[in-house]
Amino acid sequence: MPELPEVETVRRGLSRVTLYQPIRGGDVLLDRSIAHPVSIEDFLPAILGAEITAWQRRGKYLMAVLARHQQPAGWLGCHLRMTGQLLWVEQSMPVSSHCRVRIFFEHGRELRYVDQRTFGRLWWVPPETRPEQIMTGLQRLGPEPFADEFSLVYLKNWFGRRQRPVKNALLDQALVAGIGNIYADEALFLSGIRPTMRCDRISQPQLKRLHTAIRKVLTDSIEAGGTTFSDFRDIHGINGNYGGVAWVYDREDEPCRVCSTPIQRIKLAGRSAHYCPSCQK
Image (cartoon, rainbow, N blue to C red; front, side, top):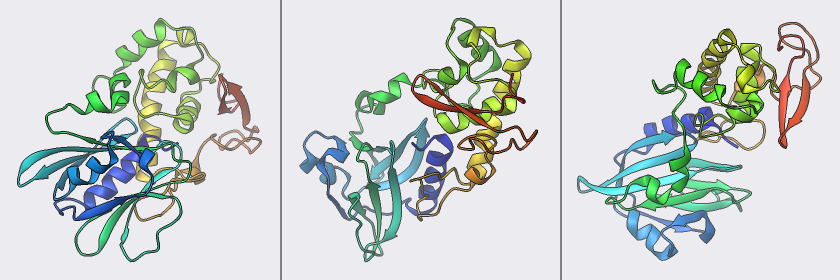
Protein backbone atom coordinates (compact mmCIF):
# COMPACT_ATOMS: atom_id res chain seq x y z
CA MET A 1 0.00 0.00 0.00
CA PRO A 2 1.35 3.46 -0.81
CA GLU A 3 2.37 5.23 2.38
CA LEU A 4 2.85 8.90 3.17
CA PRO A 5 5.94 9.47 0.94
CA GLU A 6 4.31 7.82 -2.06
CA VAL A 7 1.05 9.74 -1.63
CA GLU A 8 2.98 12.98 -1.10
CA THR A 9 4.96 12.27 -4.29
CA VAL A 10 1.68 11.92 -6.19
CA ARG A 11 0.27 15.08 -4.58
CA ARG A 12 3.28 17.13 -5.63
CA GLY A 13 3.17 15.76 -9.15
CA LEU A 14 -0.53 16.51 -9.54
CA SER A 15 -0.01 20.02 -8.20
CA ARG A 16 2.47 20.67 -11.00
CA VAL A 17 0.24 19.60 -13.90
CA THR A 18 -3.48 19.74 -13.09
CA LEU A 19 -4.23 23.06 -11.42
CA TYR A 20 -6.65 25.62 -12.88
CA GLN A 21 -7.66 23.51 -15.87
CA PRO A 22 -11.41 22.91 -16.36
CA ILE A 23 -12.60 19.33 -16.15
CA ARG A 24 -14.22 18.66 -19.54
CA GLY A 25 -15.63 15.19 -18.98
CA GLY A 26 -14.76 11.67 -17.94
CA ASP A 27 -15.77 8.05 -17.75
CA VAL A 28 -16.39 5.68 -14.84
CA LEU A 29 -15.32 2.22 -15.94
CA LEU A 30 -15.87 0.47 -12.59
CA ASP A 31 -18.79 1.69 -10.50
CA ARG A 32 -17.49 0.47 -7.15
CA SER A 33 -14.38 2.67 -7.47
CA ILE A 34 -16.70 5.61 -6.66
CA ALA A 35 -17.53 5.66 -2.95
CA HIS A 36 -19.62 8.86 -3.10
CA PRO A 37 -22.08 9.92 -4.49
CA VAL A 38 -24.01 6.68 -4.12
CA SER A 39 -25.51 7.20 -7.58
CA ILE A 40 -22.64 6.87 -10.07
CA GLU A 41 -24.57 9.05 -12.52
CA ASP A 42 -24.11 11.98 -10.11
CA PHE A 43 -20.31 11.75 -9.91
CA LEU A 44 -19.18 13.17 -13.27
CA PRO A 45 -21.80 15.98 -13.40
CA ALA A 46 -20.65 17.06 -9.92
CA ILE A 47 -17.07 17.71 -11.11
CA LEU A 48 -17.78 18.77 -14.71
CA GLY A 49 -16.59 22.33 -15.42
CA ALA A 50 -14.75 22.58 -12.09
CA GLU A 51 -11.08 23.43 -11.72
CA ILE A 52 -8.66 21.95 -9.19
CA THR A 53 -7.24 24.85 -7.19
CA ALA A 54 -5.08 22.78 -4.80
CA TRP A 55 -4.14 19.23 -3.89
CA GLN A 56 -4.05 18.35 -0.21
CA ARG A 57 -2.85 15.22 1.59
CA ARG A 58 -4.05 13.87 4.92
CA GLY A 59 -2.28 10.68 5.91
CA LYS A 60 -2.67 8.42 2.89
CA TYR A 61 -5.67 10.33 1.52
CA LEU A 62 -5.55 12.80 -1.37
CA MET A 63 -8.05 15.64 -1.75
CA ALA A 64 -8.39 18.02 -4.68
CA VAL A 65 -10.01 21.35 -3.82
CA LEU A 66 -12.55 22.17 -6.56
CA ALA A 67 -13.90 25.55 -7.70
CA ARG A 68 -16.32 26.55 -10.44
CA HIS A 69 -16.51 30.21 -11.53
CA GLN A 70 -14.40 31.09 -8.48
CA GLN A 71 -16.95 29.51 -6.17
CA PRO A 72 -16.34 26.38 -4.05
CA ALA A 73 -17.33 23.20 -5.86
CA GLY A 74 -16.41 20.64 -3.20
CA TRP A 75 -13.57 18.14 -3.05
CA LEU A 76 -12.41 15.20 -5.13
CA GLY A 77 -10.99 12.64 -2.72
CA CYS A 78 -8.92 9.53 -3.38
CA HIS A 79 -7.38 6.67 -1.43
CA LEU A 80 -5.06 4.47 -3.47
CA ARG A 81 -5.23 1.47 -1.09
CA MET A 82 -3.12 -1.49 -2.24
CA THR A 83 -2.56 -0.98 -5.97
CA GLY A 84 -4.14 2.34 -6.96
CA GLN A 85 -2.35 4.77 -9.27
CA LEU A 86 -3.21 8.25 -10.54
CA LEU A 87 -1.62 8.77 -13.95
CA TRP A 88 -1.46 11.98 -16.01
CA VAL A 89 -1.52 10.90 -19.65
CA GLU A 90 -2.57 11.81 -23.18
CA GLN A 91 -6.16 10.84 -23.93
CA SER A 92 -4.89 9.06 -27.05
CA MET A 93 -2.88 6.64 -24.92
CA PRO A 94 -4.39 3.09 -24.91
CA VAL A 95 -6.57 2.43 -21.87
CA SER A 96 -5.35 -0.48 -19.74
CA SER A 97 -7.71 -3.17 -18.48
CA HIS A 98 -7.13 -1.95 -14.90
CA CYS A 99 -8.22 1.64 -15.58
CA ARG A 100 -11.25 2.39 -13.39
CA VAL A 101 -11.94 6.12 -13.79
CA ARG A 102 -10.95 8.68 -16.43
CA ILE A 103 -11.17 12.46 -15.91
CA PHE A 104 -10.69 14.60 -19.02
CA PHE A 105 -8.95 17.98 -19.07
CA GLU A 106 -8.10 20.44 -21.82
CA HIS A 107 -5.46 19.97 -24.53
CA GLY A 108 -6.07 16.23 -24.81
CA ARG A 109 -4.84 15.36 -21.32
CA GLU A 110 -6.52 13.21 -18.70
CA LEU A 111 -6.14 11.88 -15.18
CA ARG A 112 -6.58 8.12 -15.02
CA TYR A 113 -7.29 6.16 -11.88
CA VAL A 114 -5.79 2.69 -12.36
CA ASP A 115 -6.29 -0.02 -9.75
CA GLN A 116 -5.54 -3.69 -10.35
CA ARG A 117 -7.03 -5.05 -7.12
CA THR A 118 -9.90 -2.50 -6.99
CA PHE A 119 -9.62 -1.71 -3.26
CA GLY A 120 -9.09 2.03 -3.80
CA ARG A 121 -11.89 4.58 -3.82
CA LEU A 122 -12.77 8.06 -5.12
CA TRP A 123 -15.21 10.49 -3.51
CA TRP A 124 -16.89 13.72 -4.49
CA VAL A 125 -17.68 15.78 -1.40
CA PRO A 126 -20.21 18.64 -1.81
CA PRO A 127 -18.94 22.15 -0.92
CA GLU A 128 -21.32 22.51 2.05
CA THR A 129 -20.00 19.29 3.63
CA ARG A 130 -16.77 18.71 5.54
CA PRO A 131 -14.65 16.01 3.85
CA GLU A 132 -14.46 13.87 6.99
CA GLN A 133 -18.27 13.53 7.00
CA ILE A 134 -18.09 11.65 3.70
CA MET A 135 -14.54 10.27 3.79
CA THR A 136 -15.05 8.83 7.25
CA GLY A 137 -11.56 7.34 7.50
CA LEU A 138 -10.26 10.89 8.01
CA GLN A 139 -11.95 10.96 11.41
CA ARG A 140 -9.65 8.26 12.78
CA LEU A 141 -6.32 9.80 11.79
CA GLY A 142 -3.74 10.99 14.29
CA PRO A 143 -1.45 13.98 13.70
CA GLU A 144 0.75 14.31 10.64
CA PRO A 145 4.38 13.26 11.32
CA PHE A 146 5.71 16.74 10.46
CA ALA A 147 3.06 18.63 12.43
CA ASP A 148 3.78 20.35 15.73
CA GLU A 149 1.15 18.11 17.34
CA PHE A 150 3.37 15.10 16.71
CA SER A 151 5.78 16.07 19.45
CA LEU A 152 8.09 14.05 21.66
CA VAL A 153 5.72 14.68 24.59
CA TYR A 154 2.77 13.41 22.54
CA LEU A 155 4.68 10.25 21.60
CA LYS A 156 5.76 9.65 25.20
CA ASN A 157 2.21 10.00 26.52
CA TRP A 158 0.80 7.73 23.83
CA PHE A 159 3.42 4.98 24.26
CA GLY A 160 3.44 5.12 28.05
CA ARG A 161 -0.09 3.70 28.28
CA ARG A 162 0.33 0.84 25.83
CA GLN A 163 1.91 -2.61 26.09
CA ARG A 164 1.78 -3.74 22.47
CA PRO A 165 4.88 -4.05 20.26
CA VAL A 166 6.16 -0.75 18.96
CA LYS A 167 5.98 -1.90 15.31
CA ASN A 168 2.25 -2.54 15.68
CA ALA A 169 1.77 0.84 17.32
CA LEU A 170 3.46 2.70 14.48
CA LEU A 171 1.04 1.13 12.01
CA ASP A 172 -1.91 2.55 13.96
CA GLN A 173 -3.13 5.55 11.98
CA ALA A 174 -4.67 6.95 15.16
CA LEU A 175 -1.13 7.41 16.54
CA VAL A 176 0.40 9.08 13.50
CA ALA A 177 -1.06 9.43 10.02
CA GLY A 178 0.58 7.94 6.95
CA ILE A 179 3.14 5.44 8.28
CA GLY A 180 2.91 1.83 7.08
CA ASN A 181 5.05 -1.28 7.02
CA ILE A 182 7.99 0.15 5.08
CA TYR A 183 8.71 3.27 7.09
CA ALA A 184 7.89 1.74 10.47
CA ASP A 185 10.67 -0.82 9.84
CA GLU A 186 13.05 1.87 8.60
CA ALA A 187 12.42 4.25 11.50
CA LEU A 188 12.88 1.49 14.07
CA PHE A 189 16.21 0.54 12.50
CA LEU A 190 17.52 4.10 12.61
CA SER A 191 16.44 4.43 16.23
CA GLY A 192 18.01 1.09 17.25
CA ILE A 193 14.75 -0.37 18.56
CA ARG A 194 13.53 -3.90 17.87
CA PRO A 195 10.01 -4.09 16.43
CA THR A 196 8.96 -6.44 19.25
CA MET A 197 9.77 -4.00 22.09
CA ARG A 198 6.73 -3.01 24.14
CA CYS A 199 5.75 0.64 23.86
CA ASP A 200 5.75 1.20 27.62
CA ARG A 201 9.33 -0.10 27.94
CA ILE A 202 10.93 2.31 25.49
CA SER A 203 13.32 4.67 27.24
CA GLN A 204 13.32 8.43 26.82
CA PRO A 205 16.55 8.41 24.72
CA GLN A 206 15.12 5.68 22.49
CA LEU A 207 11.88 7.61 22.13
CA LYS A 208 13.75 10.72 21.10
CA ARG A 209 15.70 8.77 18.48
CA LEU A 210 12.48 7.23 17.17
CA HIS A 211 10.76 10.60 16.85
CA THR A 212 13.71 11.93 14.86
CA ALA A 213 13.99 8.77 12.76
CA ILE A 214 10.34 8.83 11.71
CA ARG A 215 10.73 12.29 10.23
CA LYS A 216 14.07 11.44 8.65
CA VAL A 217 12.98 8.30 6.79
CA LEU A 218 9.84 10.00 5.53
CA THR A 219 11.82 13.02 4.33
CA ASP A 220 14.44 10.82 2.65
CA SER A 221 11.78 8.79 0.86
CA ILE A 222 9.85 11.85 -0.33
CA GLU A 223 13.08 13.20 -1.80
CA ALA A 224 13.60 9.83 -3.54
CA GLY A 225 10.09 9.85 -5.01
CA GLY A 226 8.77 7.15 -2.69
CA THR A 227 9.29 3.38 -2.75
CA THR A 228 8.33 0.93 -5.48
CA PHE A 229 8.35 -2.74 -4.52
CA SER A 230 5.37 -3.76 -6.67
CA ASP A 231 2.69 -1.34 -7.88
CA PHE A 232 3.52 2.23 -6.90
CA ARG A 233 4.21 4.71 -9.70
CA ASP A 234 4.22 8.49 -9.75
CA ILE A 235 1.78 10.36 -12.01
CA HIS A 236 4.04 9.80 -15.03
CA GLY A 237 4.39 6.06 -14.36
CA ILE A 238 7.91 6.29 -12.92
CA ASN A 239 9.07 4.07 -10.04
CA GLY A 240 10.11 5.46 -6.68
CA ASN A 241 13.79 5.14 -5.80
CA TYR A 242 13.86 4.74 -2.01
CA GLY A 243 13.67 0.92 -2.11
CA GLY A 244 17.21 0.71 -3.45
CA VAL A 245 18.62 2.32 -0.31
CA ALA A 246 16.24 0.88 2.30
CA TRP A 247 17.99 -0.08 5.54
CA VAL A 248 16.00 -3.21 6.38
CA TYR A 249 12.62 -3.37 4.67
CA ASP A 250 12.28 -6.29 2.21
CA ARG A 251 15.95 -7.22 2.78
CA GLU A 252 15.55 -10.54 4.61
CA ASP A 253 18.86 -12.46 4.82
CA GLU A 254 20.75 -9.62 3.14
CA PRO A 255 23.65 -8.06 5.11
CA CYS A 256 22.91 -5.08 7.32
CA ARG A 257 24.26 -1.91 5.71
CA VAL A 258 25.90 -1.00 9.03
CA CYS A 259 27.23 -4.24 10.60
CA SER A 260 26.74 -6.92 7.88
CA THR A 261 24.56 -9.11 10.12
CA PRO A 262 21.82 -10.80 8.04
CA ILE A 263 18.50 -8.95 8.23
CA GLN A 264 15.73 -11.00 9.85
CA ARG A 265 12.00 -11.03 9.15
CA ILE A 266 9.34 -11.95 11.68
CA LYS A 267 5.55 -11.75 11.84
CA LEU A 268 3.76 -9.40 14.23
CA ALA A 269 -0.04 -9.43 14.22
CA GLY A 270 0.00 -10.85 10.70
CA ARG A 271 2.40 -8.22 9.32
CA SER A 272 6.06 -8.63 8.40
CA ALA A 273 8.72 -6.82 10.40
CA HIS A 274 12.34 -6.55 9.21
CA TYR A 275 15.20 -5.75 11.59
CA CYS A 276 18.90 -6.19 12.31
CA PRO A 277 19.43 -8.36 15.40
CA SER A 278 22.76 -6.62 16.11
CA CYS A 279 21.89 -2.95 15.55
CA GLN A 280 18.41 -3.11 17.15
CA LYS A 281 18.10 -4.06 20.80
